[in-house]
Image (cartoon, rainbow, N blue to C red):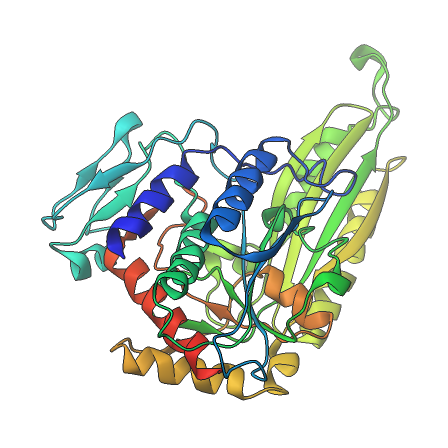
Length: 408
């Protein structure tokens, strides 16, 4: 199993699949390179013997395993992961590095990137393990190609072990999850399962049944240009307006200043010139009332900016990205009960924690298909210091096998 997992992870991460937030609302997938991995996975699924394998025109890939004899009446259960990688760090030309028998010392990568136990103490829990990283020049992309590898290794296990009972199983791979638009246009009518899991979490043992309420805000600034020698009382600098607005977002409510159940504002993109400025702000909160407060604050900051720059204007446009999935998942308690039992049977301590982010499962839960999230085993996602231990991938795969069996 470890050899299969490592082979799949290395092959999948070497395929560049970075998505593009700027294009995600107008094309699907947002980048052509996501098709490369989707088509590769479709071929592997067909060769594995999956049935009803289908890749839609918008990049949603489905495959199924029929139930073992006598398990035809068990509920169909879906397992989902996404093919794209984040744009927060360089993601093109990924060159995975495999570090066998990790000795507990610093892992020195290219470009001065260092993974040190002083900074990342979780490394010390995997001495003697195989650690997979990028070259240090890019992210690795184990978010979520580790999830894909774990799901397909589970599927391969059932195909090569017919004595292992399972009900109907469905596998779904999606594009553009990292843009927040991954489930836009999802063909719900093609989904055969009424219960699903995403395999898109982090640390070994994580069980995630709650996530943020999430909104994105596009904020535009309009200034007025004139020769700087004649600017007094006339020039309005839109770039300065955008910078001023950014300083109004409370530093104590930024991602780097919050943890646990505390929400935040964070500037994801900013650009500007004299006449035009633009900013993307993401807003996150675990509580609906807290989200309402944050959305109102964006309008208040806009008014304050206009007051500070007479003659300039600010427009705030918000869009819901996903909602807290807790209530939807609570309607089917077996989803978590079976998962926690499977973890304990594999000797993995369940870590029930809210997601400080979201998954395709957040959106799918909102659509009426309760979908909690399971760990992949990875660390430091969206960064050049991303790493994943092979033993955690193996434990995830074994948990998935047990979990599928419990639903039968």
